[in-house]
Length: 496
Image (tube, rainbow, N blue to C red):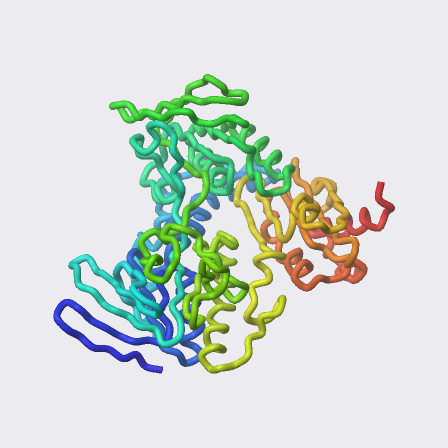
């Protein structure tokens, strides 16, 4: 359907079938899905079209990491190692990073929206009433967008800065500044032990920084414990100082620019750390504080609770009247990963179309309009050295869910393909099996270049392939994927 538009002095109005607030990868995918089905769609964006992933997260982050990773890989293979005679060209790495961030210009993404028939409205979007979004631009003029069928909040999240004495005054980096930095600091301190902290410690260590990581709860605390142990050991071997079980009590940046941190607890209690820059990577907060949520009975600044078809739930736990408001991606706090947000977007776009057409929804588990994988089969790669790749439940999560599980581990270094892949290969694999159904519900790998092994495990978990059938999925020899055979062999032996 085509949009309806009208204009008055400094105020424009238009009606679309669907209005999406946020033009990151999630919002783009929702809009594209409904547009392909013949509905009109507008996307509201106050920053760059393409969102966090394109400019301050996935793409530039991996560009920062890849060059050092390739160099380390070459140095681990005799014959190739002898050919490596120099160190990284840091300027070239940063130029490559800039290219993957499109030099922080969104021309290409805007052209894609145009080609898809999606209207872009630049400015800050706020709900003012059901199905109504007011967009304010820099000059103060406004555009009122009315949605016939749905408004979708896809505004993502931002880095959380904790209440530590002096921290905000010290102007710390968050994930954005660390990814987009124009120069590599001689000394970098990192507060946090999650994915961003681990990846940026790896990246800046590889680029030549003297890195200190300050970790309260352990490295990668939500993953299988052995993954954090491997990553911590590797960081230390690469010259990174890692303080475990410690917190930062106070921060000060002096007139010379040096950042001073006072530590408390753990092995570093009472110590002081000095750095040229400080990265804070301790979690995320929803971008929902200035969306006008209060006008529809919701709490500003909150994560938006949703049902399995991503309808926003009110205080009573029920969808808002009219099934018109949805939330996808980080802002609903289901899974804060770009690929999972895009998965939600595809299901959500199709659900909006079905409701607009009066069609029944396929929202049973694993149905077209359900987001079942958010709970059962989330894949994730942490691009540290070594890489961490996982899907589904950890052993602890499976037990907490009440499953009768059997956990099978195998040393990745004992697989023939690993020895060929690199000298001194170290790693580990874990398979978590639901004994009642005899299917894999979780899989974790840690080791060099394990990211490309993950999708096989994702398929096994999503498809609920019986363990007996997996015996017939023969891994090619000699590849690291032979770990599947070794895990199945171990599973076939009686449990200890």
